[in-house]
Length: 260
Image (cartoon, rainbow, N blue to C red; front, side):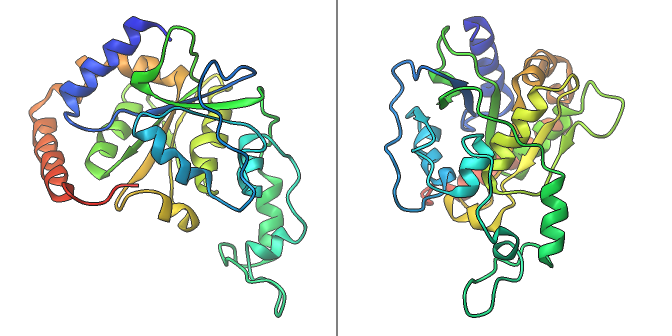
């Protein structure tokens, strides 16, 4: 990470989004570079729950053994096959044998949906998560992830579309919580025209994030021009000043509340 770019963003973030948490980043690497490795997880645990530590500044490195959720392994690129009867698990279930999540109307729709998902093998042994201010010159983040409430999301969303003529600078594909911050943003980072990903709509992952929080994941290739655009964008206008006052109101309402 370029130290100047790192500091440039921190200054602008504090100016336009005062007192809001810094984002989390991730990158794939074969060396954890001194970052604590998440312990092997035997029981099922959502990866999103572990990111609470990272949001608080505690960096973590995950490998295939650190992720116990089968969907999580797949969306991290540590596994390509989905477990048997997944089509029933995500839809109507199997009476007397399996409870269905009912996120899709039928097993057939699950099949069609799965056929449209582009899988990728993890390009490194470790998936390293760090908060922005913990990044060093040795780090090369692929994606930047904001955990944010609506007013902050409105700013990120509008900035993500600032330098585009089309209205599709942000996508919100259906998937598990981890797919919206890892799988889809990683694929966008590989494209020539990367888009940001609005996510954390997955009901199964909602218990792992604070109330009213969604995610906004930005491929690094897109994040850099967004940082450079901040000072000439709507963020400098009276309109944004009004939104900033609502951000302060939201912060006051949530003071003393429990955060994951």
